[in-house]
Image 1: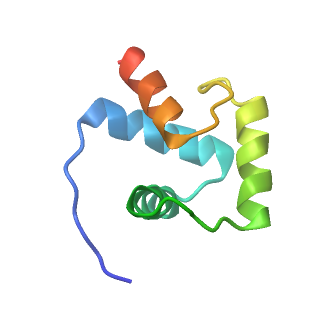
Image 2 (image 1 turned 90 degrees about the horizontal axis):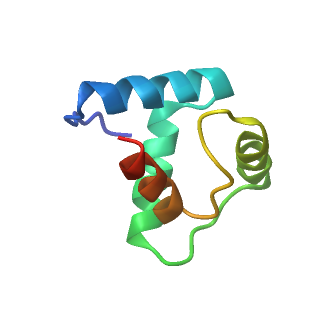
Length: 80
């Protein structure tokens, strides 16, 4: 593992932090997963992660039923 610093606007960080805390998700693992997903077309995802993601999609009041990172990105941009 390496420690890297990224600049984010404060509102995006706060929303993502709150979302992750409320859903029991590690922010750094989510960022790592996102980057891996961007670097390959076929991402291996664990069954545990898929179950957690399905639960979030179904129960979260902050996001809709997204099927891809691109859909989540569009949702965030449209609600900014």
